[in-house]
Image (cartoon, rainbow, N blue to C red; front, side, top):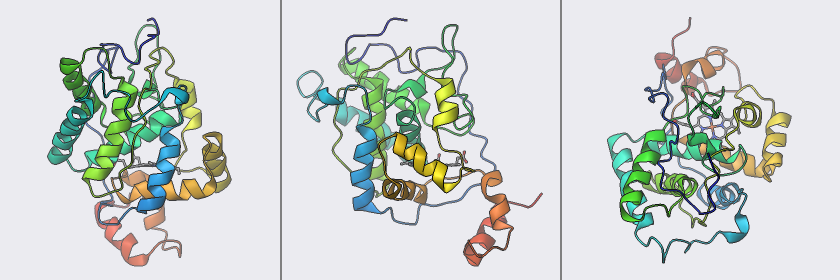
Length: 263
Ligand code: HEM
C-alpha cells in the first residue's frame, strides 16, 4: 500500500478487512462516570498529546474550512449518536485516541487491521479485547466521505472524536489542530506492545513512558484523570479490592467487590 501525499485517502479508516470487531469481553466494570475530570489541567495536557504527530508544523484548527466545511459538524453528529446509544463509548473513544497517539504519534495506525502485508496494533496486548470504538470512527469517516471524498484523514477524525466525546459527557473541550495524515503502512504491533503503559507498570516506568511522549509526571497524573469515566475489567483490580489494604477506600472496595467476585 502506498503512502498518500494528501491528508487523507478516500479509503475507509479500516483499510484491511480481515476480522469483524467482536464485542468487548469486559467481565465486570467500574462505573466512573460520576466523578468530574480535572477540567482545566486535563484540557491543557491533552493538547500536548494531540500535538504528538509527524506533521505538527502544518496543523491548524481551520485546516478543513475551505475543503470540507461540514466535516467537524458531521463527525460530531456521528459521535453524539454513538454516545447516545452507549454512554461508555465516550470513554472508549478517548482511550482509543490515547492508544493511537502513544504509538508513533496520532496517525490513526491503531485503526489498521492485520492483513497480508501488515501486522497492526489492534491485537497488541494493551489493545486486544479491550480497546473499543473502531466502528464509530469508521462510521464518522463514511459520513465525511459522502460529503468530501478523500479530504479528511482518519487521524483527524480520531482526534476530533476524542474531543467531542469528552465534551458530550460533561468533560473538558479543546480546540483541535487539524491536518494529520494517515500513515497507513506504519502500524507497529511491536511498539504497541512496548510503548503503551501496562496496568502493572511501576511509577518510574510510567513516568518514563510519558516522558518519551513529551509529557511530564504532572501531565501523566492529570491525564490519568481520564479514568474518572469508563470501565475496567475485573481481573485488573481484583487483587486490590480484596486486599483490605490501606491504599483503597474501604467503602469503594466493598462496592466494587459486588461486581467483581473473588475466584
Ligand atoms: C498512566 C498510564 C495508564 C495506564 C497504566 C492505563 C491503563 C488502563 C487500563 C488497564 C484500563 C482498563 C482496560 C480494560 O479493562 O480493558 C484503562 C481504561 C481506560 N483508560 Fe487508561 N491507562 C493509562 C492512561 C490513560 C490516559 C492518558 C488516558 C486518556 C487520556 C486513559 C483513558 C482511559 C479510559 C477512558 C479508559 C476506559 C475505557 C473504556 O471504558 O472503554 N488512560 N486504562
